Image 1 (cartoon, helix red, strand yellow):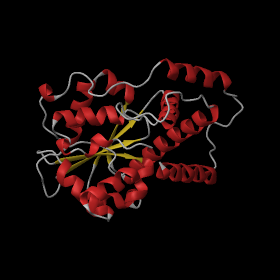
Image 2 (cartoon, one colour; image 1 turned 180 degrees about the vertical axis):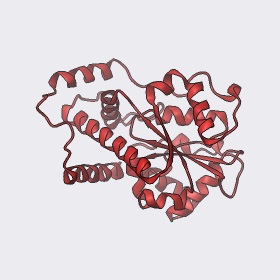
Image 3 (tube, one colour; image 1 turned 90 degrees about the horizontal axis):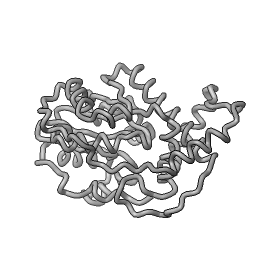
Image 4 (cartoon, rainbow, N blue to C red; image 1 turned 120 degrees about the vertical axis):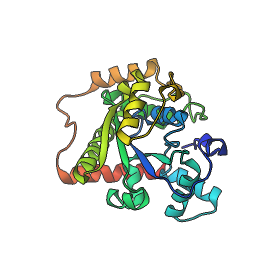
Length: 268
């Protein structure tokens, strides 16, 4: 998978700080709209620059650039550079990235007392289709070099992405609720349709002062979906056999599925 190289640019750094006073975690899953939200939050200058810093490929690159090998040291160096002047550090964390922290219970050691925004998509099939297409093209963010311009429809791949999105979102919801974490839930369409209102809600939740004039009125990222997405979703629904088990509720099967997805994500 090609790296999103722009994320490493020093032009995105803020003046150096020793540590953040508030932590924002966008609890996310692939193709849920976290890139769209993270870049909009960055534009305000109040929420750091929420990116996938804990993604294994990104960690390797940050480690090389800083000359630091341990996870805690790399994360600290990122916080020093990506904490906004008001003391807020933002990060996007997919559920599969929790492995880097040693699980959610250990997360507070690295990111104390975080404010979490669980971002999901109501149209989870659209999310799954988008995930399948991005996996093939290698374009997760506009501007990346395509691996192929001709992705191929694959029912089984979309099905795997659909199951993964459902499982990981549910896992986030369970973990945040059961741990007593401070969190709110937001929907992709809600954020896309009311960017200003969505950011104001996050600011109220975190107790962050922000002027409405500092919030971008339009999205700063480019929408990637096209007619292919709609065509694949329609084809999937037409081919879906209602006798198929959507999600296996057996605990052992869920654990096996999540373990396999974690391994797949770590290979990316």
